[in-house]
Length: 436
Ligand code: GLC
Image (tube, rainbow, N blue to C red; front, side, top):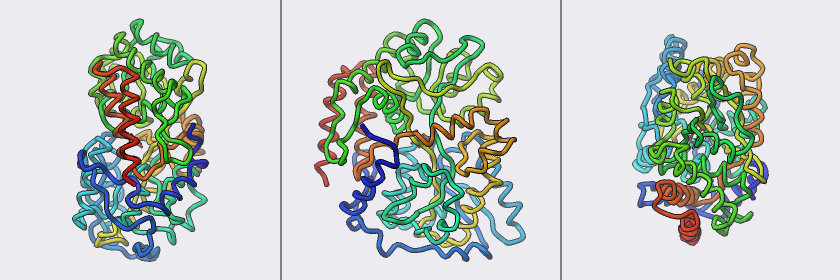
């Protein structure tokens, strides 16, 4: 079974040393990402920490859809603060889907375009992008700030012995529940799903994309399943534990505990569904908290609880979140560093946590009374992040994730049995592993 991020880190390093295209994409999904020299990040551009001091001009910040409004607030604050210096940011908005964001960034980097000076990059991509030499090495800047950050998000930036960005926000998922309808979230996934099927209903992310991989891994790891062998070289997904986890997820859709449409839901669709007031439960990341507080039909009527256990098994969370990375093709790396410095600093982190319920990456933000009040589950979040499992670490992670979400999605849609879904995923992953 995959251990904590800390235990996995040597595997990530191994991938750095041994292979080309860590996390390299799959042409069939437009993933791209192949090419580049094997392993080493030698020759990557290195940031000059002093370059941010008198930075001027425009910085283009690329990130997924601003569903929370946090980027709009950032733009206002940053542009006011840095107007006298002659520095301003522009937002280049990418789609909501994590896979699509990756594709958009890869297309720009392959074209050596300066479209994104700073990129809000999912924690699972940093190593891949660094390996492609698409990023500035930020070690000289980060060395001085290292002790400010929570260890888990910081570790997602560590590749080939260097730090390739700064953390922006950290994620671990929770169960949102209507406390006007139920007293608490049942202790196991089995009980939760059966409560949902008895009438409450649950929504989660079942579409064929990265989000479903996260949702499924939470069940599979909790059931005792694994995806790869400890050394990352063998597929281990076709196991009785994983069949059990898949079957459980399929049953909640079949029994009507989750709507059939869940097989098309990403985060925004599941949130919209929960906010209709129809469902008792929702699996989602912390960002949903502040948005629910503004939604007429659910505000004041919901709470947040840690994920349940798998019956006879454990509880497992997946580490999510975003990192800030500077494009090697930026024409304004000093400006990008000034923006990164501001976004990963105390003022913006406090705003992200207290107004937009995005998981802070600075230790000190968790101690702030305003944050504790606005984010009542901040202590649980900090704990969840520290225990969270990394997603399988492999040079071909995007293909592995695709093997999971494609087959599990078909199973949820009733087009495949749980056994066949795991068999097919096993063969897809074996195929992906054989390419390096
Ligand atoms: C959230 C997480 C990210 C994950 C994505 C999946 O944005 O922060 O790590 O990959 O959801 O949809």
